[in-house]
Amino acid sequence: MKMFLLSILLASIIPTQQHPPDPPRQPIKPEEQQAQTFTVTHKDKAIHQITAEDVSLPYIEGLWLDMEKYKQFQEEVASQVYREPVNARIDVNGRITPAKPGRELDLEQFNHQFAAFFYGREVSKVETPLRVVHPRVDEELLASIRERKIGQYVTYYNENNKERSKNVALAAEAIDSHVVFPNETFSFNGVVGKRTKEKGYLPAPVIVKGELAEDIGGGICQISSTLYNAVDQAGVKIIERYSHSRRVPYVPPGRDATVSWYGPDFSFENDYNQPILIRAKAVNGRVLINIFSSETIENEKREVPEADAEPPKEVPAE
Image 1 (cartoon, rainbow, N blue to C red):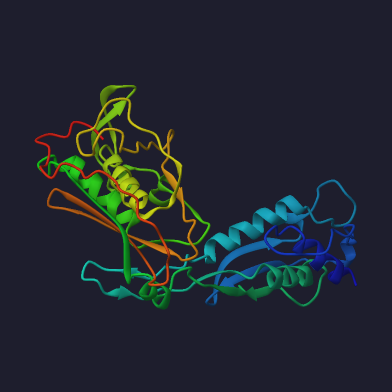
Image 2: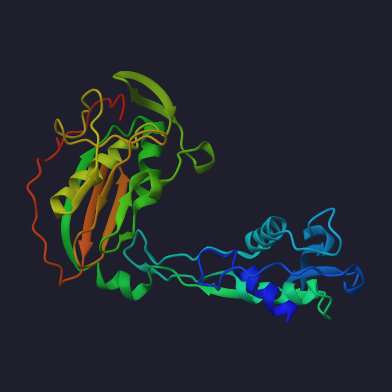
């Protein structure tokens, strides 16, 4: 009975699943608890060990489970076995790269295993229970939403500026093959992530309060601006967009979308009843972003002004 109550209690700390309310904690008398180590393995290799005392409340007679300590232990195990699923993508040759499933700790089963150990049952070593995490985008979905082009925009950049060109290409790669589902909001910062040296981004010119400066990832606003014009032509709902504090040369006046990790973002909502697919590439001084969806989508294209077809001799900032 005690083990059953503890199993429910352990399960109650998992916010993503539905569980009964917390029952009162049940203490274990010291003489009832076997002195042993709880060993967690993955593929028959030990990845974590813990004793009942390690996750018990101090200075209390008997063993009372400290839920904060147990949750920390649980999260450490979960992080060691987690593998993120990989969505299907379209490669540079137009072929679909298959999706790959991920995995995560089966929290409910793991809690039952730990409860058996904590109450002195004959459980001291367990193989980590796992659950499959399915990718959001598989090959079938990707194939079905690459049929109809609903938006397109092209901008140009000075490819002689190697650092800026590298940043532009990395940002384009980050959003390429991204699928935005119906009623979902796309965030440029959320999808591209923080621009860091570890990801390959380089220092290049940026605009800060109307003045030129240099920062990691300079130039990526050309991708957010090109994307803005492409999705605007596709007719989606623009949620958040800000212009630079001075004009940029790669889009017509007022058609830019500045982004910064600690500042403005560019976001839009897919208010259609079909997913939309973003295809983006930056090569040879040209940024091309296409927006696709299924043949059944009913959209109304907006008119957007074209960018200057001649690349700027020098793009000093975003």
